[in-house]
Amino acid sequence: MKNLQFLVLKIGFIFIILFVFIAQAETLKVIVTGFKNNNGEAQISLYNKDGTIPDKNTNQFYKTKRVIIYNKKAQTIFKNLPKGRYAVSVYHDENNNHKLDKGFMLPIEGVGLSNFNSMNLFNIPNFKKASFLLNKDKKIQINIIYL
Image (cartoon, one colour):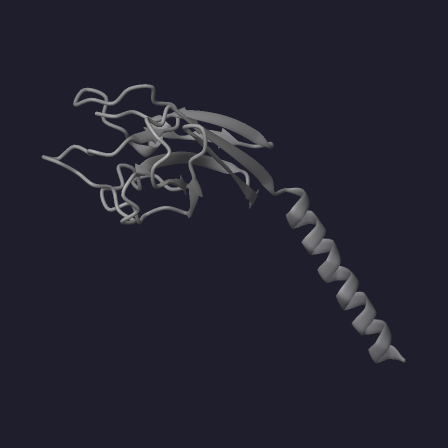
């Protein structure tokens, strides 16, 4: 009987911990606009550490999703995120080769970043500039930039 009571208490404790964790998790909705066409897909990546942007090989992300572009827009939702600082990066993978194609140092496919409306040699992205605080459910919009 004591073993059964202990097991019930243990299971109850686990449910309380799970509830507290889920109650603190946030949702981020990302809406991307400005695609020049509906070709390919958009890769929408979420970053949570300083030094991960710029991400030259698009592989230092915390989470990423590939989404369909419809009516020159794309959107996704990241769920169950711990509160903290995040940045979002997007690229338009027009040819579906799963990489950001570049010319001479610059992307030849469209790119976008949270908190950025333009990019150039004087406005180089980094995590600090692109990041925002996620402490409640949030929706952000990013416009794709073709350089």
